[in-house]
Amino acid sequence: MQKTAFITGATSGFGRACALRLAQAGWNLILTGRRQERLDDLQQELGSQCQVVTWKLDVRDAEAVQACINNLAPPFDEIDLLLNNAGLALGTEPAQTCDPQDWKQMIDTNILGLTNVTHALLPKLIHKGPGASIINLGSIAGRWPYPGGNVYCGTKAFVEQFSYALRCDLSGTGVRVSNLAPGLSESEFTLVRTVGDKAAYDQLYQGSDPIQPEDIAETVFWLASLPPRLNVNQLELMPVSQAWSPFSIHRN
Ligand code: NDP
Ligand code: 8X3
Image (cartoon, rainbow, N blue to C red; front, side, top):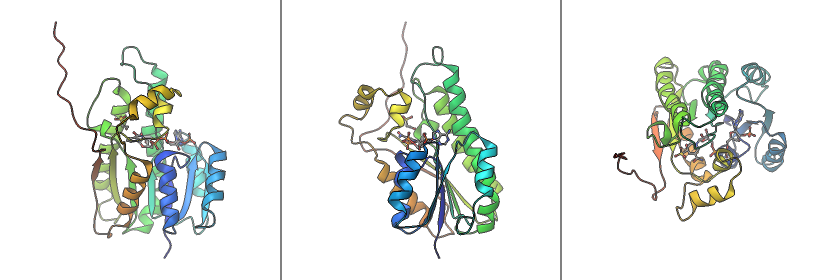
């Protein structure tokens, strides 16, 4: 029986790589994001491998999210996987000098956007029952703070705790919930965060052999393909090059 995935933020990075990986395995795909031309390109690229429907969607718009889900027609109305991937970091400034509008956009996208999509899709996931999965893109930033991480770290801590609490509420439904928490990964994420600063992008990844979107896609495919009796609550990934540092101590 063919499976169906609903992916937010399919136009780039992890979401796009997951679409490619699931298409390779013959999954039906509902691909969403704000950039229509990229969705069109994906549909063109994957349409011969699997059934694809695309939907221009800003996850911050709860009504649009609900309308998208209400409009899903067979075979896209039976969902096996919700990949809550859409998200972003904006800025690397300390809290005292950063732009509060950036904070708002991160909260609206990473927290409210993720809850909008989750709430709207829960009835379909519960209807599907055992084997259905929600995979939320958390981050090491949700657990390990760093200077300039402020609200981004906070949003990803929310994603982790929301994932666990959701599991409690979904107990008995068979629906699984995982918090997938990657570390340093190469994608447009860093260009978004630095407003297109290619030098900062190059400096961050240079010589570090970071996680690639394909690594995340393979992990997502594995999680979604596990026996229905298994729930991976939390999965933290880092490139081998990344590790913890000692606490900083400010001395007068
Ligand atoms: P990208 O910037 O490559 O992709 C982000 C995706 O999110 C894009 O497809 C973008 O699509 C979508 N998106 C952003 N805002 C919205 C919105 N308001 N509504 C709908 N879609 C939106 O980054 P990554 O692939 O690296 O990141 C994916 C997820 O993984 C994020 O949640 C990120 O926080 C998390 N993550 C990233 C890490 C990294 O180092 N790269 C590490 C750990 C976690 P569009 O612009 O078309 O709307
Ligand atoms: C992205 C990873 O360490 O840049 O979530 O915050 S990090």
